[in-house]
Image 1 (cartoon, rainbow, N blue to C red):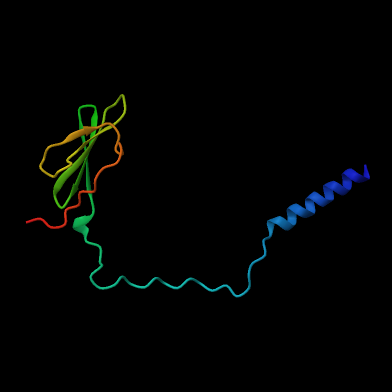
Image 2: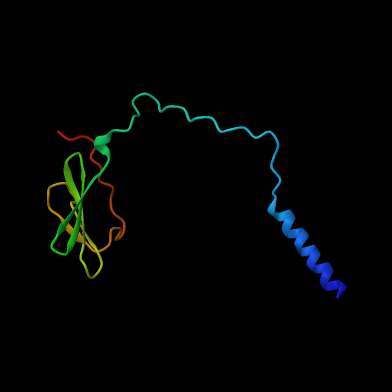
Length: 113
């Protein structure tokens, strides 16, 4: 009986000491981050613009950057969603059942005329 009482008191003491963690002394608040360097401000034209359209029972999400449609996600009421992606930027969309279906060559637009 004494062993059980001793084990119970020991477990209560361990639980009480675990609840109050020791704080390191002299904590200071984190300073504010510096502003971004000049010329590195976020351009709102580069952020994707998402438009959600309901056609019949399908939900279509259109993704645009700079006013150009580059991807559509079609979600039917039954089944898995699929993607229509403009790979070359010429307005021809190809269907992909999954968004990441393997390795693709990076095709970034550096300059458009």
